[in-house]
Length: 329
Image (cartoon, rainbow, N blue to C red; front, side, top):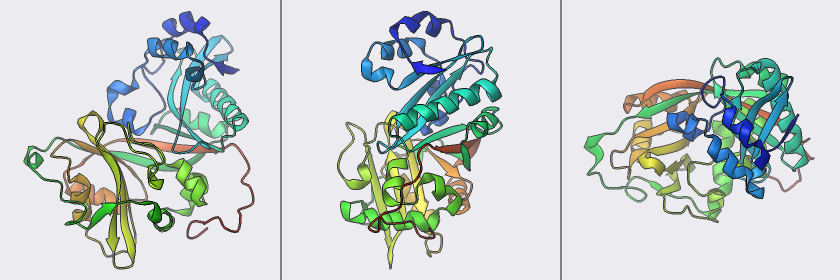
């Protein structure tokens, strides 16, 4: 059984001691920053006092009391959630209690009109078995690539968008970026990440403190240097990146046209431009081998591996005639 957090859960929150010492579900932010993985009962209690905050966190009950606490957040749109934190009690069996928790969460998501739920776990975690038992589909394996602070870049001036070929994404670029996604992403991933433009847009993982819905140009982030840029080629965009400089570290995503004749070393230099030598990090999916090689050449160091799962919580409606479908779909 799983239910919303309540103020009466204070004692349960205080005495929960997560079995792994930290969260078993990860966002880009918590994958990069170990301090973001810690269990903070006071934060959950504070959220339980706010009606809106309760909807983001649930407490799960198993055979012998509280089996875990889980928190979700919306991705880029209202139809997609991701598990941002998941703490299991020491008495919980991940393959059993974890599976029940994830299954209950998917049912709640469906009742709230959510179509998909994403879950990222560490490679080798027993939660992989739990996810599969709960109906979550393995999407891809990811490796965290990090580049430490580079003092050589502190005096570097931001040279995009004009000189480097990068430019800011505008509303008119939405379909072009979606086509790039269709050619750069395997079908097996698109089946869960999104086959139509609205599905894909809602599934984009938010970067720390960056604005959601930014691909449409509707909103700007508050006080954080973040944005989206396109690299134009002869026949359209050949690369697309999103970045956020929250916490004095450049966290970014990068997508590159696989058949384009593009210098990936130059692409990575464009990604780092304007960062003034600050540390940088990206979760690179297994299928993006060219990007991984370019990051290594730019002195990025591979770290932890993660597995990304997704659960479809609602049947796909018949695709309207005017809905754009990713290439290969």
